[in-house]
Length: 239
Image (cartoon, rainbow, N blue to C red; front, top):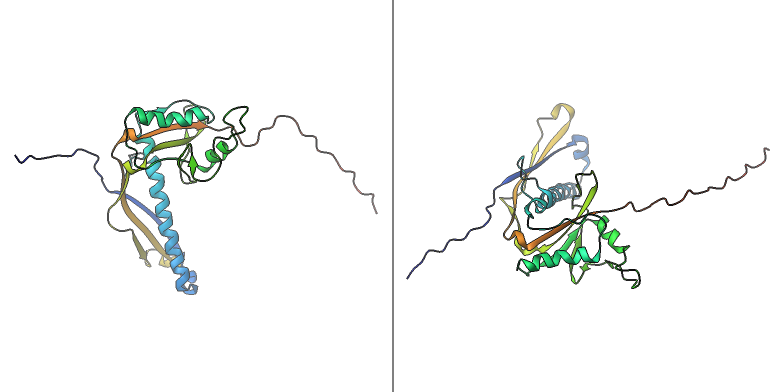
């Protein structure tokens, strides 16, 4: 017999993401088509950066989407401190224990955490480091980006998230096209043209258990272990 099938899952809701800038008429009268196209590409890129930041750390309030940092609630490694092989591989085990999907699993972090892992050995004797460069970490695709935001913990430490998951389960939805509005009137008295960039998007995760996260606390790159003695060179004789 015919049956009705219903599907449950996240719903996408448009969230406004906009920016406002201005350019002088003096600049516009001197620009070539190539320069104008370059400016448009910069505006498009700025919008893309804002969307990616919300993808990771959107608060879900004040017209912001809810990002991965706040959507991941099941698989959290609460171990604070520097990265270790055990913690990195534990993220994978958390997902495996939940029988999560395995379509497009990958690690992602900011560039500073990647730099740290390149200089941390797995153990005292092997000479092998946690990360050896490139786009592979523990046998999985690894992406590092400066756009991935850091966080601050309860003790005011800056933390660097490492996420492992099936990114096939994460969605960025766009509602319509990005619009660029040129307003030559509002700032006309100062001989400037106002430019408004506006788009609508949302973030959703179809299976939250397909992701795991850990927040690492990194020590400074350069630590002072002893006072340095700087020799004082004699001044040349007076002429």
